Picture 1 (spheres, helix red, strand yellow):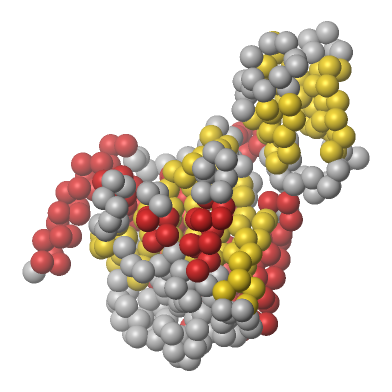
Picture 2 (tube, rainbow, N blue to C red; picture 1 turned 135 degrees about the vertical axis):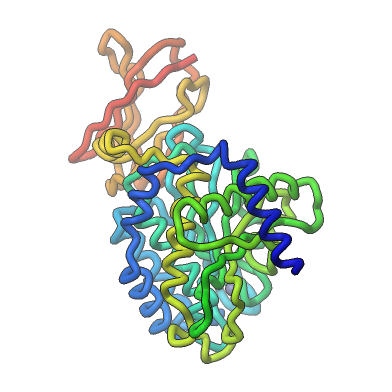
Length: 393
Ligand SMILES: [Zn+2]
């Protein structure tokens, strides 16, 4: 009875916030590019990679598989970073894929889930989340988003959230200024249970200490539930956060939400956590909701025109714009290691010119010597020349 009351309450809450979250047909068009075949193929590949415990070749092979997947979607090696740590004498790696936002490049939507397993191939826990993260990344590769997205595949979750804790301590808090996070959206164990009716996804809300970030988590989790209703056939159930990778972020004061299966499988952490004991159609439907939610959180611009300009410019951007002192050069999905960046004034005179070698995704240049005004920033490689207006204040 309590169950039913909470669902009615949830429906009411969903309706009260729905005004800010309209159905966006262009989002649905992207969601509908997801396929059951893709999800099932990724789940099968994940399963075939074996038991992904710390220190195993299977864990490293899974990391390599993730990288090859992202590359096949059009992301570049420069967009991928390994966050490495050691635990119990073994080297473990998180994989972080960054897609730079067009309007708020320094504010991140984190879409994450673990890829390590214990005692089994972990096809549900957490091949399911892994397959969905890959599907979101695949479909959003050529779509501009206002906020930056970090797709993170954590290791060490089964060792006690080691990977996500390392990322929070050594990346989020070690960045100057501290990394600005809009929301952490974790996807863990969403494979469903074979033979059961899997028609409801649990949306995880922060109800634990510290309390300061709980209200914001409630709001974002309502938004997540609305995305489920808008972009998938599933029902929602809001429940408290589980012991998974958003917890180190939650303890750090970040706003968290996530997906977890509602019919909870008995197979995770055993050798029988495999596809035969799951409901791949449920996983596919959770994926649809997750794609819509990621587009909502990161504010995607899915119109054909926006996509065209974004990709004609190889997703390159220069920010902040206007700039006062430091200008960041985001090379988007260019594969070139070296490039020249120049700034040209309104008279056509080159006022700044620098050659960059062995570049990362983002390089910085000091523009504080330039007078305020409108300039052209030019990024030139052996095969590309991308020009954008730059304003110096
Ligand atoms: Zn898990």
